Image (cartoon, rainbow, N blue to C red; front, top):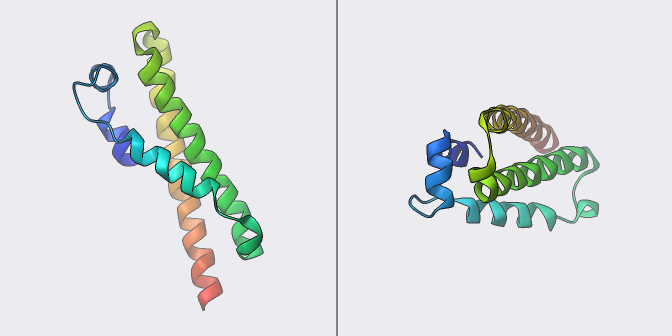
Amino acid sequence: MKHIASQLHDREAISHAAEGHIHCDIGELIRIDTYLGSIPLHSIPYSLVTPTMVLEATVRQFKDKIEMALRLHRNMDASMFDDFFKTVTTMSSSLEATCQDFEAEVKRLEG
């Protein structure tokens, strides 16, 4: 998510990506979303179910937000772009915290 957010760091970059002038790794994000959605929650330790669900939801919402911005970039005004960038920043922070929680729990289970 941080990589894609860095690719789409301003209005101009979003426009260029939407119009195909620069590469955006949205395909990789779609694959990650698909992989997370296919994790059978009944097969993982109970303590990892909630973090897995949070991770999956965050990635899906991020993907949806990116796809929306790429699709509607020409119709977005300054406040919509501000909201987009704030939301992306918040989601990135949330994902980082979730990944840290996930890693700590995995280490606890291993240890």
